[in-house]
Length: 235
Image (tube, rainbow, N blue to C red):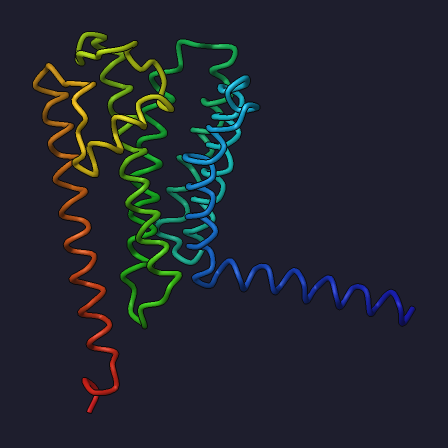
């Protein structure tokens, strides 16, 4: 009996440690790591290249679950995130049998990414010291911008396949639009993909402006927080 009670106590402590760790700012580090792996690492592997559609659905499922979990401390954000996330998961996997849902899937994913960005920004700019984990959360938001705009470009492409002029084959999935999105948000602009309609041009311009303004505001806010928290400023 004593041995069983001891094992139960150990399991309870381990479970509580996991919960406390997730509720701390460590969840920001985990989410950033997940985004980096699913966006930049796994696509380079042979396994993903052979089973791209399955990989994308599994990766987005993990991202949705993790993103919803980020909002557990704020009920005002948690329940909307949970509701939209569940609907998105159902639609995402239903697309294997009902391809007509593809456009709805992309729109739902875009809504989730915007909501997750808001959740992360709330935690990054919350009162308190500037920590390495908060910086990682801020980086995750920047990456979410690129992923979100990739979904926006995909939605536009569904409605108008001639909205871009491409030197090679026009991207046909979000994973392919990520390339154009990230070179736009970083204002690199190689010129191999060119927007040709008013909508796509404004989307591209808005992404480039958002990326630069975000970095400017982020640095200014973090520096101000660091200065206000310094010992000299409190004297």
